[in-house]
Amino acid sequence: MTSRSSATTARPSSEGRAVARTQTLLPGKDGIGTVRRTTLPGGLRIVTETLPSVRSATFGIWAHVGSRDETPALNGATHYLEHLLFKGTAQRSALDISSAIDAVGGEMNAFTAKEYTCYYARVLDTDLPLAIDVVCDMLTGSLILDSDVDAERGVILEEIAMTEDDPGDVVHDLFAQTMFGDTPLGRPVLGTVDTINALSRGQIARFYKKHYDPTHLVVAAAGNVDHATVVRQVRRAFERAGALTRTDAAPIAPRDGRKTIRTAGRVELMGRKTEQAHVVLGMPGLARTDERRWALGVLNTALGGGMSSRLFQEVREKRGLAYSVYSYTSGFADCGLFGVYAGCRPSQIHDVLRICRDELDKVASDGLTDEEIARAVGQLSGSTVLGLEDTGAIMNRIGKSELCWGTQMSVDDMLGRIAAVTPDEVREVARDVLTRRPSLSVIGPLKDKQADRLHQAVS
Image (tube, rainbow, N blue to C red; front, side, top):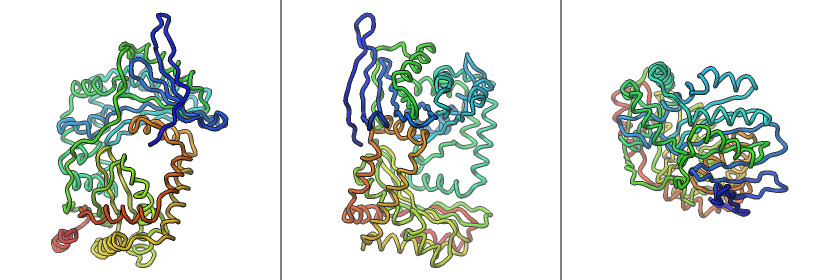
């Protein structure tokens, strides 16, 4: 990703030493859409995007920790900790946290992914100081009491049970396991019943202390916000919690590549008494830093990104074999996935797989037509802009960009990269990715003969 920096300032303290470094990463137009970053001496980064025309603001804190940072014994600890940070601090009880945001009509939530965690609140611009104070208090002052660990254990086990009741979700976890095996990327973000039952308060508290240091955090705010005011309020909240005592700490660098075990040609089947069979066929994709990701995005859109896509037309429109069929990509620091999902009657699994494989093979060998590529470029451009129309989405973009890339890219630059994708680039990435040996995951009421055939489907 690209960044355009200007107007770097260092603010001196009363002793004359620099205490903060502020940069304008994207100047915006007439001050609208300006993205700024301030790095505090404790290593905490604060990025904002200013949109004076809206009346809302979204404030979030991103932590440089996800489920891939867990050992087998700690599987699920990141998500467990996400729950516990809402349970109370020395300043607020769990009810105080939720009622403070509810009282101003705001919304607050969090999510855990493989490589990061995010906590956020969306409020009216006039209530931004409250949101900053509450979220910063949660992140810096969680008590992680034994009673809360025990109570939340039951909640998380119910969440796992709820997820298990939705095979359309479970099949994606199964596919990650199929592709990555017993590695951090292959294990479920929620953990398992066994690992959640085994996690202790001490393990979670140590995990919190290790991964929630200010050097591992990025604060992001978007909407009708003033950068200097946000920085001042965030700094005050962190200093009050004693979280900025180090003056020589530098922010942690974006996650770099590491040796990830990737498998190919594997088949994982899970027998379930379901009305539908849920199928994911896929192969290794591209890392999120790979410059070919723009071409892969266009390819993915043309193959399975909408009602006019190849897979939707061939599987659903022409043959009526599935209600839901789509392709998707997932990019991590050092690797990625390209997958095709379909939900169909169990008796139609083999027909659906045959058609999907045929279409992938055709595109790998013959490429997409110029018309398909042009349509995909337009669809991807439009969906990119429409997906960034609210302050929550903008906060996600700038926060994730800072954490994962250490740079910012404007929407215009993103649209320019998509528009610059050529048919040859799409065909080249199709020949590379779609010819990689696929793996397969299926959940449904499978018979022995079907299982045997499915093992042959990826050969």
